[in-house]
Length: 354
Ligand SMILES: *Cc1c(COP(=O)(O)O)cnc(C)c1O
Image (tube, rainbow, N blue to C red; front, side, top):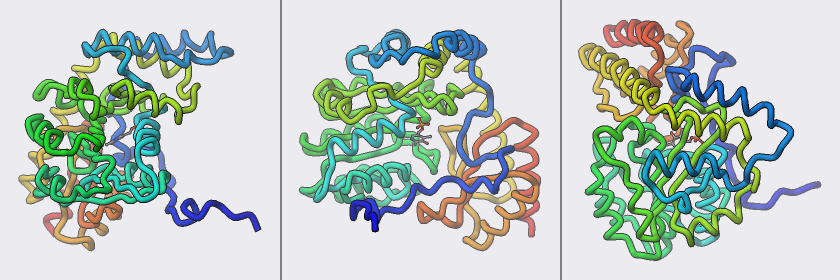
């Protein structure tokens, strides 16, 4: 009998969204409602001419573009096969057996999976009103805490805390605790709250971003992050040295160059989201305001959520169940084009009335 490592055998497989065998329209994966910049598409097509070559393992073109767009030092940037790749490698590099990774109760669950892969313990602090609580995190930190992982804005809640709270968290954590701030939805909030990239200069904080959400490139698998040099050097050892494709790199760099497209995507998505939320609130749902491209919809109980989920599926709409987060009375709805949102709204309004 061929046996896996004990801790691998004990792990659950990562729980993917149940797409019901259907591909569209899915509101389950927080993909962009809109296609990426046409310039990104053109750059991707052009990059196919170089498909016989390995990608640049230093991601130079993309790092330079990121440095220019966001005013960060290119030397602090690492790129990954999606930010999931960076979450996985940073956790494996800094937490192992006997260590704790501290997150919040409704934090992005892939961090729990990455912690299991590192054979470390995943610990959560409660959120308050579906928001990260700095006090609860500080109270839950122990001698064993190696990493604190927060999502801001959060997934699946859609809420965010102000930068001042993040700073207070950092200032009250011990300096041997690595703070990882996952900002996969940061571009949807950058107009209202500046990015926190400068925190990396402290040497103890990592900020992660992705091209999968606002930039509309989920299928290309490009994530990035700002890492203090000493932290980045360790993460780099665990990365596949050819972790992203030539096409992905070219598309991401071209997408960055088209900030007008990004801003339009963010504005259109926010308008659809806020309109959808206003109708849901009017219909009686207590939906938290969102800073992302999705909304979390609470139902009276798990039975009501399940029943409505089945009705949505019958209408061809797949939302994300949140049982894995202990939120089995909620569904998460990605913002999609207007006709799809209207169909979803029709089902949800009728469901609340019954
Ligand atoms: C979608 C998402 C990611 C990861 O996306 P990638 O496609 O791997 O870049 C990371 N964190 C959160 C909170 C997300 O919602």
